Image (tube, rainbow, N blue to C red):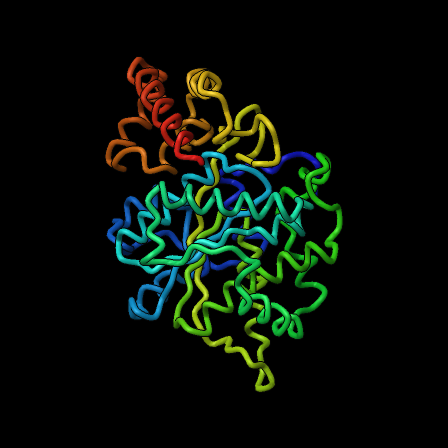
Length: 344
């Protein structure tokens, strides 16, 4: 690994397939609809999926979509876009779970217990204001979910040393150089990873299929959980026979040369704490004419900002950097300010 940032270009996506031995059947583009989203929209808003076709083959009553967020700091707009994706899936009829990673931030990022507890409650209200319906889905923290904590201990018997060592995020060295995370796979970081896997496995005890929504840079976490679950034997009080699929989101290019939006790296993105005038400035100053590298265009198609058909026109306007693109950026800045004001 290098302390230089890993930039999430199309070349990066292709390198994942090659380096980790994924076949075209492991990471696929969409040729089916999901939750009322057409395959065209799915291919625009997501990079790829892993076994999501198997997930959709399971009955609606026996499947669930899950995602989670670390409580290391107030959310940035890429996090808000992730919540919006869950809202779209929920509105399309999928049962959904959002896990608020208070213990993950307490262990993995060294945040105080009081800080993460308070932040998880604010995240809960933010998700509700963005449209997530807690009466139809699950919106929970980690510290109060004893079943997942117990199952973390039970699955620990089936982990191996190499499982943890090969689960480092691709930008780990970049974050270490900035003092954001521990340099090595410490015990507290292992706990965070094992609890995430337990969240997936716990759902698999009562559901035939579990679909994990993550950024593509987190694909190693799904592999970690799959490999551990595959080792369950007759002595395990847990079942590993459920479908564990993944829906991988594209990653939003960061501002100021950073690889992606990060709550832990100031200046990398727009957060709910960014002042109004700074939001307007960052959006207006993005004159990148490559939509794939433009932080603003990338964020537009990640969020529930406009119908996906309109994004085709906006894509061309961004590439031409014309007057319509400047007008669209002004509208989008207002949209981001509105989302910011939903933060409690």
